[in-house]
Length: 120
Image (cartoon, rainbow, N blue to C red; front, side):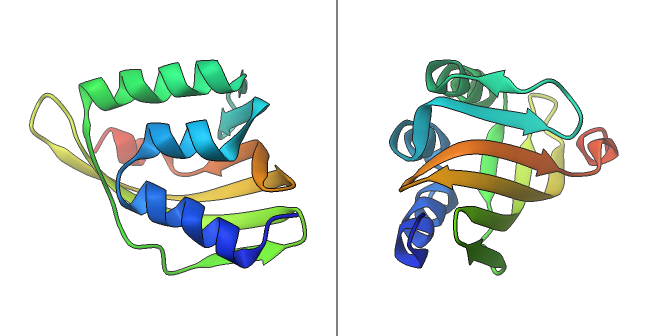
């Protein structure tokens, strides 16, 4: 079960736009991430590679988190990102991440957001 301070450290790294570092430091080796109803990506190495590839294509700016909840092994975070693609268009993504932690590491994570926001 993560402490509130551990979750705050994780959030601070993501807010600093160090997304790959956050995965490397705070996810279990067998962690998974799932976008809405898509199939989950499994394995920290795959998660790191996927995130690095995304960040090569877009510029990401993470807003300061104003809402997150810690309840035992369950954490919910409301992330807001601004992403600028190669076309120069900036899109805003407001998502809810639901996480299951094992100790001080994230084991399962699922993101919920409106996929249409990525096309606007």
